Picture 1 (cartoon, rainbow, N blue to C red):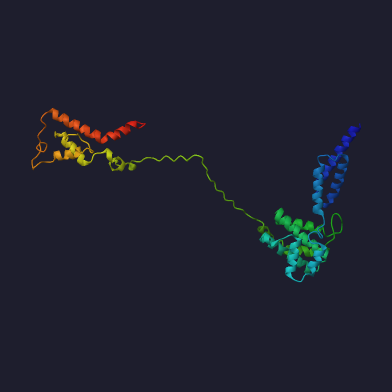
Picture 2 (spheres, rainbow, N blue to C red; picture 1 turned 120 degrees about the vertical axis):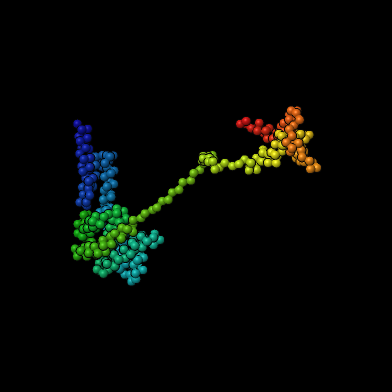
Length: 335
């Protein structure tokens, strides 16, 4: 039926278009264009139409003659009439869209194009040949060095393709901008100039960027300190800590307590540093008029009642001395 014939026609056109999309050379451009036109007539919405159109546009741009593309006919005649290096360099930089503000790579390219033009001048090339050679070398440098970073053998192949495409007047496959003799001179010049210094040109576009990163830690809460081990060397004598001196008796007070334990009557008021009892105790233990006290003579107490009174005085003195500290310790959460 009609539907089957239409489907068969569509499939045949699609297959033909797929085969034409393997085009790589100038000779394949016309086949691709014909297949694309046939596919658009049958079904413009075919999925292969858009990729085929993009491929055709790219190949036409690549196969387009380079004559008077970068350097127009007017600029070429102006270059050939220039008398100073500065004039030539300025015109070439304008045509090739270069600026010295771009860095050393722009300086290298400006020198590259200047020597290419001077070669054309020495060979007395026509304006058409000069413009074509400048563009051929510009495309060679851009594709081989900047964009595709080709190896030297592959760059040689690209140069030959560009030169061959401009040697014979056979549109749309080639254009006769060079004669055979001019093409030979161009090959010799490129071999002794650009390709001899190919590694140098490639190195100019081999850049390396160093990226240095640092991290900053931001915390909402304070950082928990690290646990530090305790060593015996950190231990201190509590008697030497100023905040703890009130908890300990002085050597003089300890001697007085020893005297009381031996049987000496405590002074009235007990033992308290604030009430003067320790002072009284010292006065009581001191010998009077050269006489030796009973404790000094080693005489024991008269009875047990006297000993109990001494012990009570000692407890009262300690309570008066340590009572405030004991009260604070009793209120501590860990007590």
